[in-house]
Length: 174
View 1 (tube, rainbow, N blue to C red):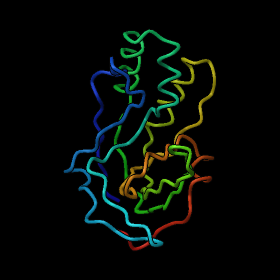
View 2 (view 1 turned 180 degrees about the vertical axis):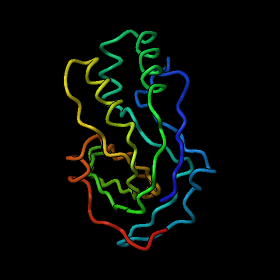
View 3 (view 1 turned 45 degrees about the vertical axis):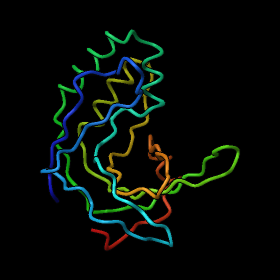
């Protein structure tokens, strides 16, 4: 298992929106995946930028709706700085599929993720939950490696959503 360290944005929330907060992964920690792959007749292209999502869009919108941006930004920066954001790759890859509607037509989004061990995620989400006065589901730490052409994000914000979107484990990928 290769270890890496994820870095975080200095400012969040962004003044013009941007509800999610991601930790970028430096290329020296995890090289971008090679070339495209085909699985189950679907062509996947590599993500150009690898990251770990620590606050998803839905949670980010909720936090932005409850707290003043300047206070929220400082509080989240303090919580980020209090954690050690080292992660370990699992080598386990999953094919995900999520139905959605676009222009009134049903579509499917597909991605391939790798689960990672990220001990900092649990205490970080406990603190966010404390701010909101409730327990939050912990997002399963993962990195999206590939997406199908035209796919939108899948949004794996909880273990239940991961189970709902998981098609199967993919072996022999990298």
